[in-house]
Length: 180
Image (cartoon, helix red, strand yellow):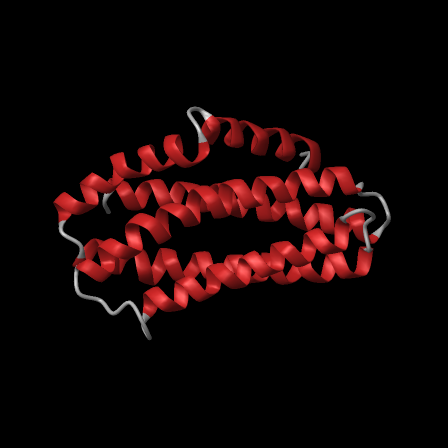
């Protein structure tokens, strides 16, 4: 497996951890124990890490490399993954709508459960189908170049050090919501 795919899989692991936290937040919301501020902070993490950072790397760098290697942009796996990214964004928006200014427990939990299921299935497809295929069809030199392109994406789009700050935020959220 290429280093570029390792980077994306590592981010998937972080997103999967965030989904466990979301499950807990959803449970708390159902019981009336979650605050709108906590939920919106968590959704900010999802938007910035899962979407801007991770999906930004896939959409702006990996997917174009896959298309350049000869796979179709429309009607194939790349367009399916892009569509799923849009579905994820819509579900995050639905969670935000259900949490701001005041949490609507039923609406929030419904959207949170749908998002978590959607993202778990999406990550499974990428890890087992898309990523191995990318390693097969994209030239190794291009895959190697994606690693530095990912770093530039983090710095240019998110700001220097922001990726690490988001990992630290995830650790804080894990400590708060997933107590042993």
